[in-house]
Image (tube, rainbow, N blue to C red; front, side, top):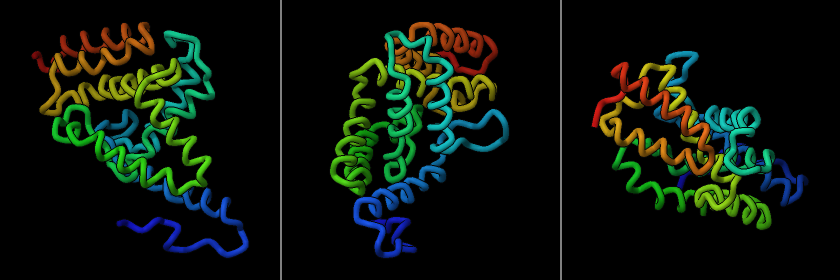
Length: 210
């Protein structure tokens, strides 16, 4: 098993067990900055990393909260979108148009959650694990809106990149529309906006027909 980042340079004694485990966790999630996603940035020619994606989602919650299908707690939603991809530190990214990655995604991510969150003190481990599970299940308005934004963000990047990941072998009009359908439970207005992007992108030849 890969060593924790903190083990390369252990914290000095006297910090206290609780704070030491929290700082070790904060250090470990620095790995998120090196997990590359399939999406290309709009501002420059390189792939987005998970930390950038999480920041972008948090900002989108603040800016777009008025379009949530149900009233949401903005702070709670920000917490969910910041936490939800942490497990990719160990599980890796699973591009939505890569069937092989999607098939093993649930198993890999559950194992990663077991490994990651247990590095925190027991109470916080339970809290963050519960929030991750809430997001994955989409059981609250906050989770549904966060999941909607998680689909809007890469589609906006694809639009700005004249296709982006819509050029992957597993992407066509049917799979792109299916992905967009997951936006609607969290925000029908954002779903309508993305549907317009998809229609125009198809007309421009950026999305293959079914």
